[in-house]
Image 1 (cartoon, each protein chain N blue to C red):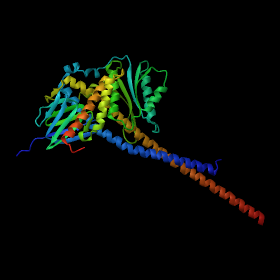
Image 2: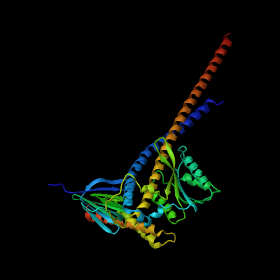
Image 3: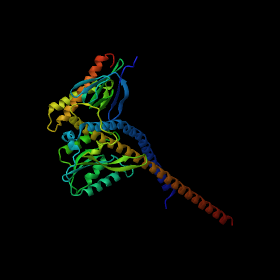
Image 4: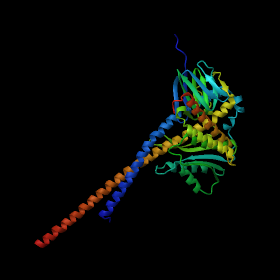
Length: 299
Length: 145
């Protein structure tokens, strides 16, 4: 049975832990505002780019499109040769099941593509450590990007997307899938597997906008223009993914740390109750002993 | 008297929108094949931008930006610029730009075997643009630092 002193010690250590988790929660809460702000700030760029792509495609016509340098980005390649997987996790733990969910999802993805050579692009220290420990699979780690959160910038996205585009263009990889956490709300994140490359045609075909007759003058030619625009579209996508994951990580950490603080508070109140009961019991027994002793003397 | 026609200008980068629906009189874009001036009534066009200097005039005030490549679209007196990165001329740090320029030059001349030629040249161009903007600023506003 624990003594009073042990319980007091236990309470104070739980209190210290609560202080830390509470501080982490507040830090995450402060950072998440900025993360959400940068998601919002990146939206105009992405949406304008999409409109421009659609306009351009409307202008271009199918025939020109096939010969443009952008066409390979859309090409569905044959099902052999290596495939690419990009895993986006956090750098740090203490954010609930955030990293585990991603790693589980990527393992499931690897199981589905058993027997093929896989090239990995890893973002975040957790995924790097995990895949370095993983052996016995035909994995080829192509790129590692760690320490970018919570200050992911467009330069990072450019680096990552550039690498993926390069290995795609060199025809060594026939597609890239990204596994990341989507920021759904402050309370929930969702694991998403999205195909990054080849691009799907529907980004160009929007039924809502009819044929356009703007008669744009293009400088340089339309095909080159599209060819220059699409890699930037991919980069913008990657940037969005990084920002989403960053916000989701902070949200996950915030709720994990909040429940940890609550648990610590519960534990403290349980322990305090136990402590008081025990102290009361001791006082009662002592009193009983004194009364018993006095009676024995006086009797 | 009819109101003078003006351009509306948007400028966005992935990290933040810079200008939104700003009314301006004249824009000069650093297009791929030389600088392109845009006045109200310009024909619809889409241009690719190289790293360079973007200027716009608003009344008598002129503002200069360094843009690092991107695209611009002119349609119905509306200019939309999507730059990969942009910097207001006032915010460019001349000393840092000079250091970057020197660093990029050195990297190019050293010719290390694993040097990515294109990346090194791109960083050299970017540094050159920053430097140019800083010099322009000094010429136009000698009083300012």
